[in-house]
Length: 186
Ligand code: SF4
Image 1 (cartoon, rainbow, N blue to C red):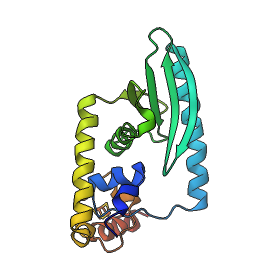
Image 2: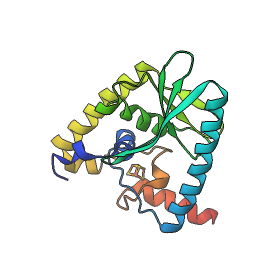
Image 3: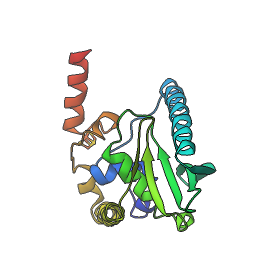
Image 4: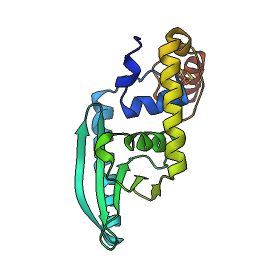
């Protein structure tokens, strides 16, 4: 990995690297991608319906940029407060989802957003400004680590339940362990 690469990591990958800098994304198969898209679309509908019932209007949908995709932008009708909402298809909102959403706050095009939320079909979580600031500090530390010691970063294994199950780092002893446990259960 070259020193410039950390600047180009997508929010999704950077969020996982903040939790485990040795994380490598596992390839996504077509079947998995299709299933994910269906679940995600279903969650989007639920999140939109919930917000409309709670006094928001939907102002934008699925903005895409360099390595990222913002799901929904809402505006509270009574206050004009703008909420950027990252929709997840998973049953639970994980730490890695919050981190990923916090990273969107750093994108220049979101300077006019008042709050950032992560949602699934059940609930919405608004991120605190403390959490967003903490993530921004972690971003700097993670990028510095990758730039200053890329070889060390590649083997700095830090197991995390939000990362290991989607990790494709086959050199990691924790990955081998997780794969063994999966095949035992199968
Ligand atoms: S499997 Fe290893 S490299 Fe991958 S996230 Fe877990 S600890 Fe990190």
